[in-house]
Length: 241
Ligand SMILES: Nc1nc2c(ncn2[C@@H]2O[C@H](COP(=O)(O)OP(=O)(O)OP(=O)(O)O)[C@@H](O)[C@H]2O)c(=O)[nH]1
Ligand SMILES: [Mg+2]
Image (cartoon, rainbow, N blue to C red; front, top):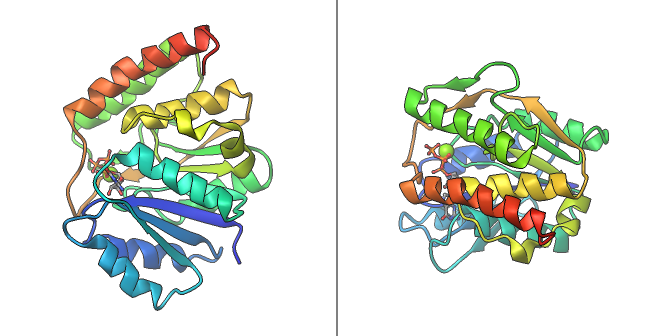
């Protein structure tokens, strides 16, 4: 049994999925993994099913009918994690942008109760991003500045998707109300956690651009974030968060 579950949403990650699973399960801390796949056309889920024979008690899989966005994939995973009694629940990408070794740092921050939510942050000390085009770095960096101005949250990396939550946080947040799909989802989770008064810590990490597989970033994801932040702030004003 493990007290920590790493949720990894996947869509067409056939080139990454086996290595990321092996890298996480080789860590000295025995985490479990839940893959939430959206019926990937490249059959990522079949590779996971095959690996489940090797990692019977550590690797779990949920396959949804069709591509429905990263936000709802995580909400699905969070509910599964709570039902299965995990105390520490992680968000991580499949594409090795997040170094699996850093899971331990995030875990330690939450396990020692220093944090209820630990964020793997690119912008605590300068900008720690490897191989991203300047346009992506600027977009992501200024997105965080924008979020800080609108919401007042003092978080350097508001769109980060490498996170550890103590289960109490996910129990307190009404997961059925989460509707955002991309970057906005990451911002929304941080804002709801912040508004409930939980302790948020940023742990410095180095983020590396994916070398295999395709990005799912799109203009609609950016638009959702720009308007989403304003709508979150308005909801908060009317006490409807
Ligand atoms: N289940 C599911 N997973 C998704 C979906 N969209 C993205 N993902 C996964 O979410 C993680 C992050 O997606 P990325 O495409 O890497 O998005 P990003 O990190 O913003 O963009 P890049 O780093 O530029 O590729 C990856 O593991 C994706 O496979 C989706 O609609 N459903
Ligand atoms: Mg990525």
